[in-house]
Image (cartoon, rainbow, N blue to C red; front, side, top):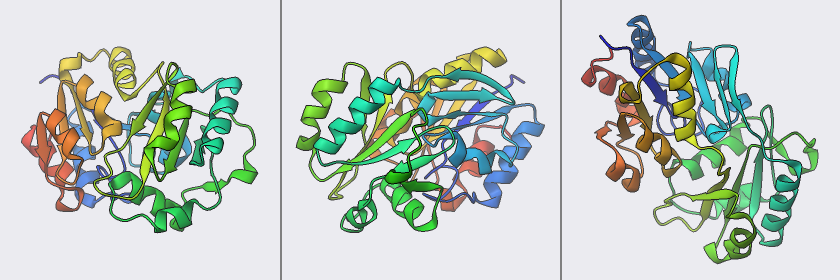
Length: 274
């Protein structure tokens, strides 16, 4: 049996959006897969601080911050925050555009005041919008922008009402950064992530696979939204949750049941990982 390297997104894939509590079926499946000799990594847009509580479930490592921080056990494989000049410019441009900003460093996150009210005015949306709404209510460690301590930033999440607001930001930043705008399915909200072009979830997958000596053909990725696109396109087998984005489903090899329908566990069984 070839060892597999499995990558699992968190919000909308491992857990309900904004939660740190995966279904017991998923926890059992992950443990069984590791006991069978496979490696299991988290692969998330969340920073290290936000995903750290889930590491206690026994993951072998993680691709964090959308690929900007990758580790295996105690070994850091990749670490690429924005430069201070890049972060300062991005913060200023988003502010001038009237967009709400959430900054993510390794060990902390900070958001603009008024974001919660803005989200409450939006309807519908995918797991990312739900994640931020719940995160602000339940506190996943997101502090007010006024408390930002200058820590190196890996990612900026932005939200605004109209994509036209982003035009001047794109003009100055798009050479160095991806604008990963989510498929919001009718929500009155533009929700996206500013990601350094030096990395993405796909480069994180390759980094971990190389370190562990696993062929890309033997990698499997589970996701639900378009910020999982590069992971799904990189792994040998891409799996989208039934609750996921239609656009990601179209790119995936398999669509498995939703999170609340024991989707991960059922997919692990189908793929003979357990």
